[in-house]
Length: 124
Image (cartoon, rainbow, N blue to C red; front, side, top):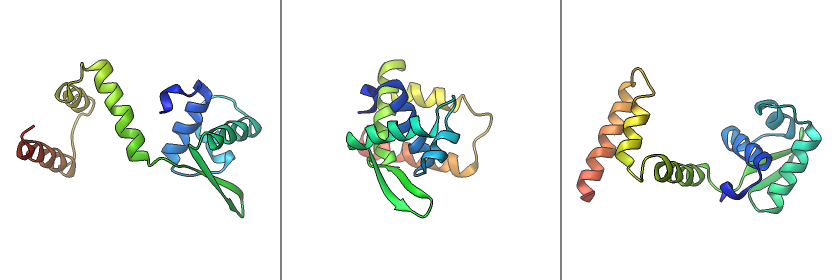
């Protein structure tokens, strides 16, 4: 879905997803680069026209939010990454992700163990 967006629209959309919601100024501040509020507002309007962003009026102006759920977008992006860089292997991707951190917190280890147990139960 987002891979077909022009680069700047994708950057604005990804920033808004990270923020979960925000004003034009909040999105601009969270982005790298030197876009003006006007440019960010234009890009948000384009994303709204494409059905990817919604807005509501607030005392601070308009507050924008991504319309697709961030989990849905994340799952799609992760699937593309696994397919592209890890030959479709979730195990290879997980191994690479685990190599990025020095130490996992106990709750992270428990979540990983649960995910592995659930995969075994499904017969994966």
